[in-house]
Picture: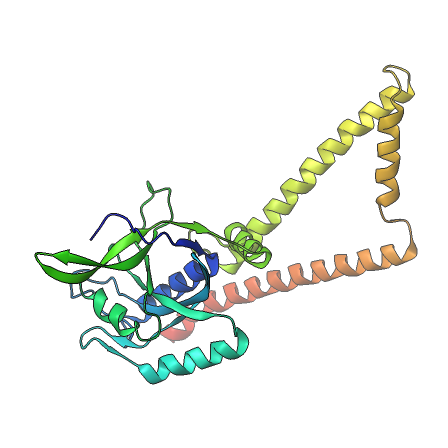
Length: 299
């Protein structure tokens, strides 16, 4: 495999593609012990419990710029190198109805590096795209690696020992995001625990972040209050520009002494207390059931 591509194409990869491939791999791996899937293989039995997944990447090509927006799964049997064409055409037709400007740019898979057997599915897609792109995601976790475990390959015709052959060559790429993707990625990064915690753990982390933000806001308000008191007492010189900024900030705050605010606040407060009481009752009932269960079983 050559070190780098010479096509001159510029690739832009959207985070949604990486999320889709990762989700596809995670689902297949979790189901691997229960049922076999036509989209997985054990990498010729060399990777043990590491499955491989396959799918198509779609997007737009404008001149020499290829932008990969989305992806969908493929039904591919690597043991026979057979691709479910009917499934592919159906998925392509459905995506065309929603995204009429998107085209199949290539395909994706998982693994540490491109393999010779990957050329079979690559050639199978050449009747759809004469120069398909290959996106490879490495699912192995390497804490020391700082770059994304994603590699993009192109295919080039090289003469090897007098025989023309298609080989995979690496291509550079950049991450391109839109506003919706940035919000989604930021939400996942901040709320999803890395240790696979429960929903309660996620809620605790979220509330801890809110508490820290409120604590920081309170400390800054105290500093500003002490500064204004010192200015009122004449301990420090008066700054009209600062007073105008404080006055403008205070005018933006909602009126919290109104009757509507008190009613809304008490309603939210009562709802919070009710949820806390229900959680406490549930824990007590669960504890009582578990404590009496051994006696009931022995009886």
